[in-house]
Length: 92
Image (cartoon, rainbow, N blue to C red; front, top):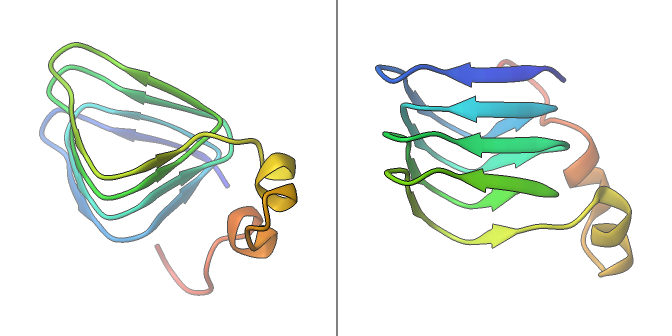
């Protein structure tokens, strides 16, 4: 996994699996981050977020649900840890 940076004119659609992310543009789809997720002013997220650390700046818009747990805590909560720990097969 890696760090994702979506600039203010960026426009992504799909299921995202990253180590961490900084988003200033538009994302339509779920975001799964093992580490920090930062939504900067102008970010537009339409989808669910799963991350242990979320930062939402004034001016960012998030439409979805957020689950903030570590991978170990998610597993203890009865979630499918395999889904949280590895990206789906195929290109992103």
